Length: 256
Image 1 (cartoon, rainbow, N blue to C red):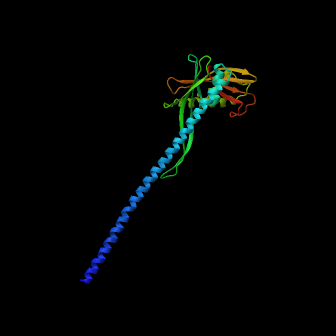
Image 2 (tube, rainbow, N blue to C red):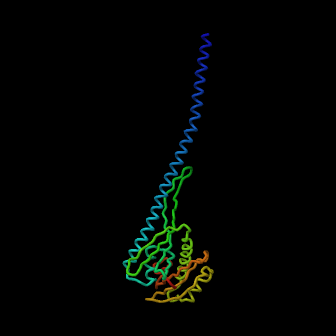
């Protein structure tokens, strides 16, 4: 009986050890799943916070441009539409600025962006860009100060603006390859024609001032209906040998 009792006790201890071992083995995947869930949640939470911070930066840039432009408009003595368009462009760098003479408004359409570092869960993260499109509308009634209305656009009208900006850069490069003396309406039209790239654009005129040649071009984005268009004044100053030089500039104007 004593030997049987010892065998029963030994078997009981072995059973308990096996049960404890099985419990530990069951707890390992549970703990692992809990850890992975927390890491995934934490990574997503951190990325969301960083994305919100980047969005706040984008909104801050847009608001700063809106406010600084309004201050510049209120401080300038210029009244001509082209001059006021230039003021707006200097502070917003909007590729499209529409002047509405009926309502005496100027509407600039452009985008701002910010980059944040995205944290990866399974693989390494990296820089992520946040970009938003905005319209900035400036208006003034007689004897009153300029006011501005900032609105985020979700139908991405900035896509057409980017297309126009690319075409303007290309035309600017082509004109920069010409000397100031070579710049004429016919020769500029010929320089822009070879690739048929600006087939929808019109070289309106070339004027000269203080030795510089100013080419006024109507640029269109035919990929949308109705086509979006913007007049640009591309100025070729003497001695501009590089398309990236400040001596070759392109600025939107109100009318062609």
